[in-house]
Image 1 (tube, helix red, strand yellow):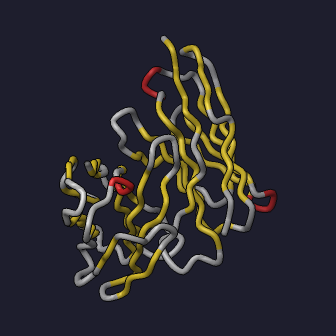
Image 2 (tube, rainbow over the protein chains, first blue to last red; image 1 turned 120 degrees about the vertical axis):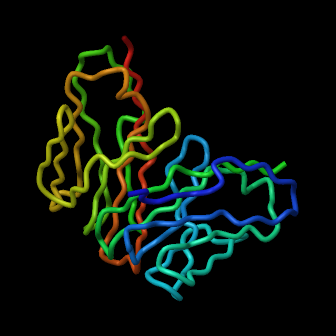
Length: 112
Length: 111
């Protein structure tokens, strides 16, 4: 049972480049979300999804785009990377509302 | 939105010592989890505990939902307990999987 899998683990981008962070879960969870963690801080919600075809914004959505075409996958897109998006990104999933959330191993992104 | 405060922000222990970490939250919650972020950055689930008391080995947790706080107890600490401990909550007003995290407690256990 792989749980929540994120790829890549590390990435360096130049300012203005675009990329997609991948997140997949094999637990048949309906709820998925993306968080970012900045140095010395807790995690902040970027976007979330309550099921295939349904997404919504979190606390810090600017500069990011998401879609949810399948239950398993929830990719996060950076359309034009900026240095302020240098962070560690975590994907999470849970079975339904108010149930235990499980996190992927994180993607460390540096934008130069 | 809901506020989550953790204390202390930093804690240094000698191996074998016990400790209590606290998480206060500003509104009623339906979900509360404790995580350990290890030195490699991985978030490890410790407890899913919206109310009551749970124990797992040397760790235990208690959430008193009516008084809006949760405690994480670490007994006989080991160097492998080092890292950052996060409390995260999901309140009644949340539309989805929206955990709000506290700022964390950074724990260092010295041999």
